[in-house]
Length: 313
Ligand code: AKB
Image 1 (cartoon, rainbow, N blue to C red):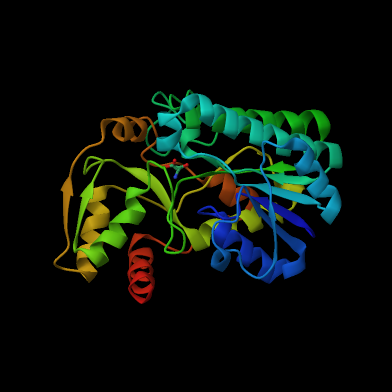
Image 2: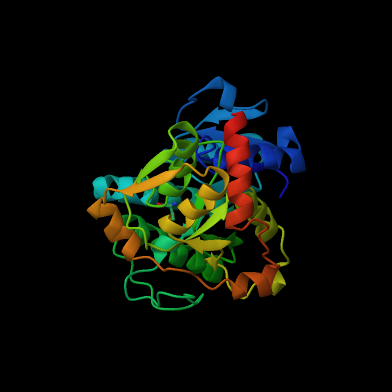
């Protein structure tokens, strides 16, 4: 990777991925792009372009203008918000994806798009969900993610395009809050614990989902993209996770640092339904074997870091 275009650069992952990439590859080699410039302070000091991924010709021009060799496509709607407007979610997630994938093919670029644990469904094995198994997602977000997995595989097999991807679990970060995900509670709980000493959770206390701390997530994107292609038996997309916990377990961990913290439950049926259709925990053996995936943070170390960082913030 020498010249990288990142779409959705102001989103939850993009806003941490871009500075990380700039540190590694040089600030002039990372073209951050998003639909609109939200806030100057977030854009960093590198190149930023306004780019709507639905606009294929601008995307094509951007690739030519900067001599791009890699696209990291992050622009997408997350699960809960996609369920509120499923037709729009299909349009944005699929058209944005096929535009970037198509431009990558025409220019023979390396290509990364994140998939998600949402690509599994209620009849996938619940625990230790294997890399290759039944995938019949029931959320619109999951349907778009699985479609992208299949299409990336197709482009790799048919055209030899260097497509790579991971199935991200819920990502937890103190930098940019997520917007519209089902796993977002695991971020909000830290903010509310510090601000109010309490949190009202929209999922049942025993809802298990996979999670990962953002520093591990951005590191693993680069690690996968730089990995030896001859070792990769899988392309789209690798199971990756650092931990699996329930609201009850994360609240217990927070209590160790903020003893007065309390959690209550006010269930959002739509979000609960989505969470119930996802695995409790996924099996990451293929990512470990094929490109040495190794996250650093577990629930305890992430909780300590989140609370330290948010208190300073
Ligand atoms: C969401 O909750 O929608 C995302 C995801 C698991 O892909 N965080």
